[in-house]
Length: 349
Image 1 (cartoon, rainbow, N blue to C red):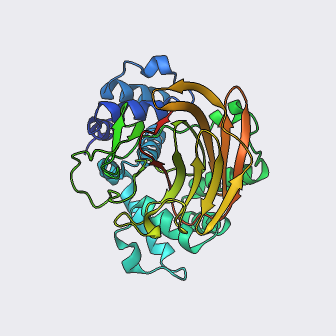
Image 2: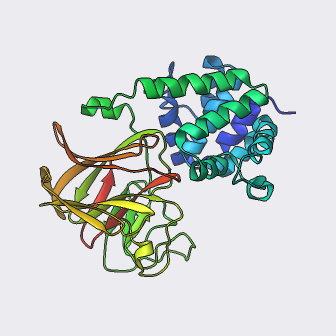
């Protein structure tokens, strides 16, 4: 049987250069790591550094967590021997709760199981049920850690106020080429999208938006997350459930025009917000930082607190100005997304 370090190396060896770079970006947020330590580290070096700083159990948990944040769930199979039995037992207990069936849970991995729970329970209920099941499984330390973290989150639920506060929740995002409309050009390692009028020779894909000039990020956002976008021209900045429709011109496919998504409508002169059938014009004006090839450039920050049901947008320069905050209840995993008009662009910062 492979050792823990061999399991970890098997997983990291599957990452391409950009994915390993993103993995290390997440890893440096953990205590004991610095950008300098990881800058030139290849996959074996990265595993060695992790094994020096963490116990084997911690190294596995951190690797699994990062791969999930990167939305690379297919790579978790390399770690299945270490986590699968516990997940099977967890689902066996979960199916005794109303609204769950053995068939519905049979093929669900950990992220799928979380999504199913969030559809049926409030965040408070989901945490309580998870803690109860972990205790039934005699995973008392894990239950205690989850309970303590949840208590800490709810008792010290301090809203960030300065840009420095928000940046501690910064997440690294990339655009998913499989979702990009054919009139979008992705560049800069899939962190910039530019709207064009000439169709690009992208292959057919079930996840691709085929009518609206839209793209989703590869990574989901959960907990508290913050990201910034440099905008040029007319764009929509959105968060959406992955279940949003992709094919056709109907409102079910348009970010912000249904109950699956929320959007901030941005131009160099104004902002407005839309969710489902309700549009709100906003008094805050963009702060132009400079003029680029496609016109005036302005920066927008987005902050999500999933458990609190908060979605906030900010105009970012030397200071931060609140554009709009929306309070809701999120029932599925969220993915950042963008709509980009012709001769406009968005760039993840």
